[in-house]
Image (cartoon, rainbow, N blue to C red; front, side):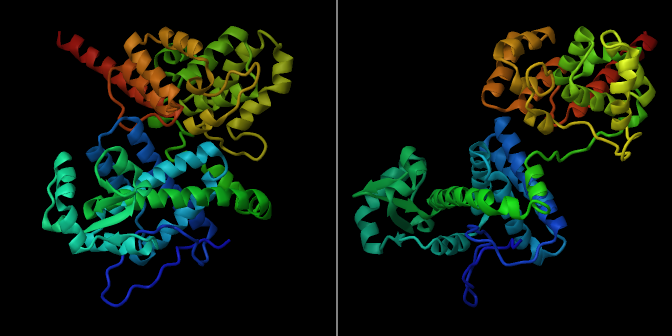
Length: 458
């Protein structure tokens, strides 16, 4: 598959060019499958970081710093000459990944637009002008004569938004007003006879609007190509990678418990009550109540317990103790014990399965009689309120959580629950049920240690 950087006119000698791209067309490069996936994952870390920052209500300055840090961490390349290629390849791969549904297109378009806006602001004055020239739009710089005629009007608008027209701002562009809706709606431009007069320090809004429009149309076209040809043509090579990338978890896999901790059967109920995230509390409670879980629930809870330190022997004893109350020992050994050993890598292909990430849990589709999935996504609001109330959430904290749920920020909702329950902030956010457990366990252990020290000193 050809994935490459956008075709762009070569700048003349000594001309200033921008490092940004409108990603009009993929470049003609050979891309290794390994780079195809790794570059996309790095860009996905940036976009998800932006999404998390927005969800947590970061201010513009904080968000700008966050984006700069994300780019510095994830979008570099050992070869400086390959940075532009990585940028372009990763964009086109994720365009393919996120073109497939309306919800995915909307998210990708929003995050890429924010990323583009940030990067455009970092460009020099000359590079911004060069990029504007590449848009192939009929934008005309206002002549000196016209500027003098409108100077007073332009000055009034500038003063109304706390700015002055200095020499650096004398360059204005005359553009159709509908191409700068952001500036028009906030009354930050002068409009005359259907044209908006955009100062050079405001062209970011103009360029971002064009970028968003082009990408929005491109995502629709990409979806058509994906559906009609690419998905079937690449079903044995690229399609599995593309379909998996949108649910990729980018952190630790938690396949092994941290700090050599082990969860014993004697303490499992206490630990479940204190340190399990809501998705696992719910499964655990339903197992104790019904003495049975369907396959999806067994996998979600079983791999979680494996990740927090429940060894194979104890896992078999735990599941046997519950299931035999309903199905009997013989049926358990015949139908269920093999699956438990298999999930621990002791049967079949000996694969050491990893616990499910939040993204995987959220993207699941539980049916009738199933109890797996994410409560913040799959519960009704009344059921979620009841579950949060059992966890001891205050009304005010609960309303903050519900507000995030209504806006589909499910992981942030879980993060807010963690912070409310434990009385501490979690800046990294909750991205994995086992991360929730690990962080909770550390906090509770530190409190026990502090209490012990106080008793000894007393």
